Image 1 (cartoon, helix red, strand yellow):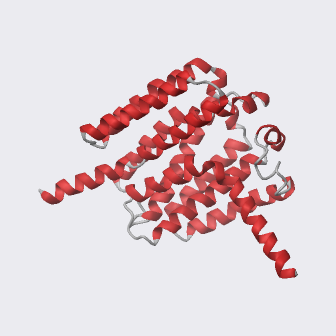
Image 2 (cartoon, one colour):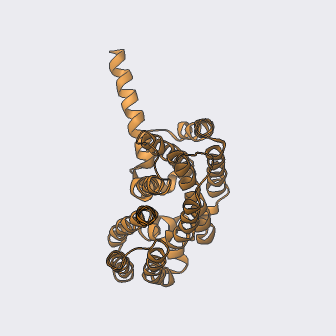
Length: 294
């Protein structure tokens, strides 16, 4: 009987941890993992679980820290999250939030001092974003999220690569581009959450400037697509397909403005974002192929 109770407790704990991160699988875990594997490049298949584990662990830390800030808002607008759904109490979630700090740092230190540095940066940005309310205004929210995303990419790419102590020049360029790209298109994820954000006084870009925010998606996605296809040397067919898709996604944000439509638009944006993170691998494959042939 005690074994059954123990098994149920473990199962509930695993479900709770999954619920903290499930909404960010497509927006963070998948694109960051793809980015690390193609940008590093991956030195061994055995590194893949390490990359996914490191990303997920730090994402769990960030999300728990974010969700203990205002559980009342989540109970109104995101009732499936583990605190309002009753999977974990607020007190236990706070304990989990702070216990994850040393867990993330210690696990990162086993890889390299550089990965440890990326973990420290994520910890500080998480503190700034949540406890110091950087998420309350669209400018600081986009900036902090862009920087945090770059730290995720840096740590994951270091773990995937041959040398965990440095990023190759191509990887550094990819990370810098990603900071700018994510910071200027992050509002794609805010359109679907406007009702909840407005209820707690949060000033996201779609709330502060609704029309310019949608125009930014319509203009920004194709512009970034053009830029990325040039930087990573894509051929004409792939470039046209990528730019055309980004234009359709941007147009959708302009035309369809319901909450349900914004949820689907955000998923389509996540697909574009994931493909964008594969482009350094495209350049590496064809560049190295041309170098080898010559």
